Amino acid sequence: MRFASLGSGSEGNALLVSVSTKNSGTPQTLVLMDCGFGLQDTVVRLEKLGVMPEQLSGIVVTHEHGDHIGGVARLARKFDLNVWLTHGTLHSQPKAFAKILKLHEIDAHAAFAIGDLYVQPYPVPHDAAEPVQFVFSDGSRRLGVLTDAGCSTPHIEATLSGCDALVLECNHDGELLANGDYPYSLKQRVGGRFGHLNNRQSAELLASLDVSRLQHLVAAHLSHKNNTPELAVSALSAALGCPAEFVGVATQQEGFAWREIV
Image (cartoon, rainbow, N blue to C red; front, top):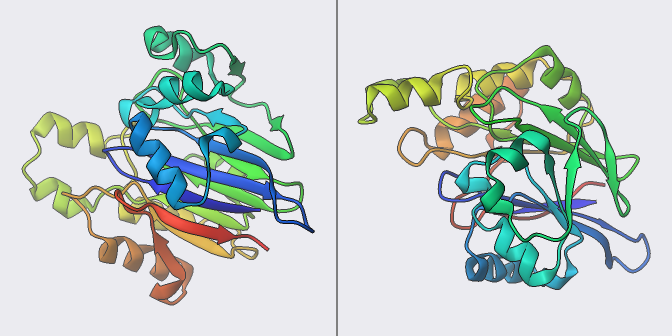
């Protein structure tokens, strides 16, 4: 099982998860989580990771914000892809998902399978209609993803505990946001309970988890105005008690390369 990012941040998000056969390494299931990039940009970013759009098994959608769904419909229509999303996400933006032939509504609490990949959605506090994040599994290994949430909850902590890999939002530094040039209303939205996790909150969440199996940790959805990779890495490495080099960072332009969960 492996995962990679096409890019992460306010200008667009997309994450790839792949389950391969043990012998050949050929992807049997290849799922894209969100797609906030234009069609051609998405194709280019996929190609950099050695993936052709025709290989995708489908797209799972977290919520309806443009940096997560901006490219979903065109990609799905162009390559006849299945799309999974919650009822609230679909009906909050019906035009955005128009003419997608293979739409599947999911229960925010019910796991489902896409080929050989098991997908567990879980609800999160965010300013969207019915937002979810996902844990992906091949039956023995688990990848937890949390990129858009204003605060942690006991359910989030229980869901992400014991994962083999984590992609964890570190959107902003509290002081940089407070002293930055965002309008007051935007500061309140970003830093509020339905906004985005800051470095300290993400570190506290990480410290509450069972990380005994953790092989990979990646900080994601960093604000280019209100955070720095150094601050995010410092917060997470301190919480985990690990060298800074262990913590990866998902960038807006490059995302991150394939990481293998063994």
